[in-house]
Image 1 (spheres, rainbow, N blue to C red):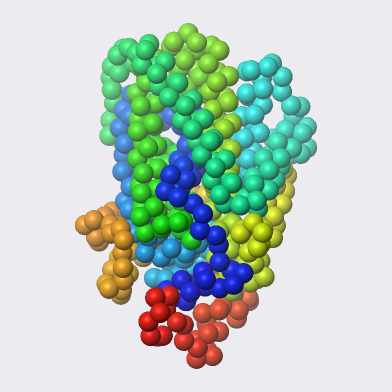
Image 2 (image 1 turned 180 degrees about the horizontal axis):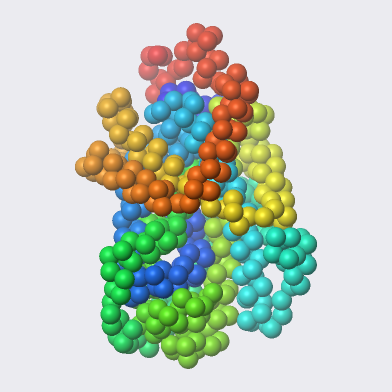
Length: 471
């Protein structure tokens, strides 16, 4: 742990501390609120009926246990890398490499898939607002009948340039986008409650408890993204206070908006009306409130929402990759920070180009399922990390502490394992194959170039950041 923290002050490898609590919270909201609320609410209502409201609450509770663990570790170990770094400090290098390798795939595929979705929503907005749309040849991947997904490439490269420019600029742009998409959701909520009726709440839970939990498993993935806040640990001005507030605060804000949106939607449209539409919120306003022109506003909200998700998730991937390179597990030259912008510019551009190619040409329908299992695997290790550090380093300063530990971290592990067990066997096979490839790369490169291992073999001591005696 001392080595990880000391690395943040090395010349050319330290990131600029430039992000405050409000910007970190906006990053969490930016990563969480995306296509999930604009699309998944219809699927959830089709499974649980009006009781989908309870499913939103249950999914939030399931995420909350892991969010608390992320908050404790982020405030205690303010180093870039999120779950990778926390695992390195608690479970050792080999397990850290496994989760880091897992997160590289998870975040990279997420960005590519979300960028593809951005192109689709852009076309939907252009169609609803102006009656035009881009031709399929340049707006869809070969998998979907096109040749080259130009919108997906455009948004990835645009976000890449913004991230190279600086974390302050990126956080400001994200903050503006978060305000816009929350305003769009607030517009929907106000209109829905003005036209609210109780008729659709009859037979509240038609599929019982099983329906509520099944819908919660679907909705759970609409909450994923709060973990991306912890990747900004090293760039937070006051990580001890700001990170716990941002992680927990973003989850609370999104839960409130999700529940109010679900209640409002059911107040103007039936579950059947929503589940049959690809744009359930627009369908609810059209059929329930008679506001057909609102489809354009919601489509614009979806485009902005997805843009901010691409920004925050790609930011998270660059910081995880950066931490792994700085530790020597991947080429250390890539961890060089640009002196003008204070960002790992070379690494960011390289990842941006690779993700753009992935989004433009590669079939994503199957590998995108790895995102779910990768996220849940990270949740398991972060919760376990809290339990281990409480026993091995009880004296370590903890600006934020998970209450009732180890009970809540154990519940976080159980929720994640339960959801992982529900994933198809094909997803598990792909996940294991990816991890095996990672193990081979680790022993071929990372093991021999690990800075921590080389320092230990050389008998070097690492001076603690507080100026105390080396250990």
